[in-house]
Image (cartoon, rainbow, N blue to C red; front, side, top):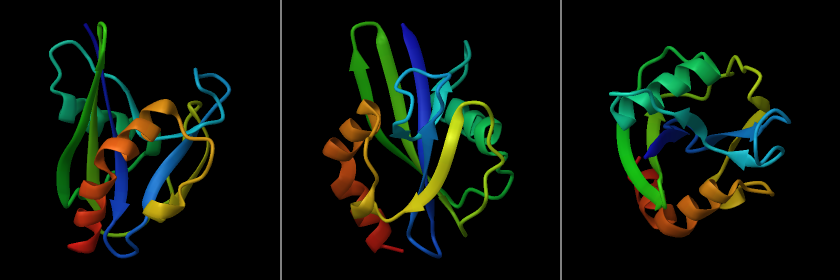
Length: 135
């Protein structure tokens, strides 16, 4: 089974979420998405999501909280979603996978959304909203 993992990043200070717009070099190019990718053999999904965060954003600060969200599965593909809480918004150092990035309020995500992020919002937006309201 192919397994991937990714995360949406929530700023505690602004209660906004960092998303990436996928570059032309990726499937679903031009769509807004979470940060993530394939996990390595033997790698825990959370470890993979954290590694992908560093690789794709350069973020080296503290993760205050880690929350497991939807695990999407279809045929021989599984994708683990996480919400990672950081203290403040930051400016990512992006790589070739990202066309652009921005911080958004939960109810003001841009269009078009990657199918995975759209599904995550359909399944877990209430849970994410509760986490934001608890800050």
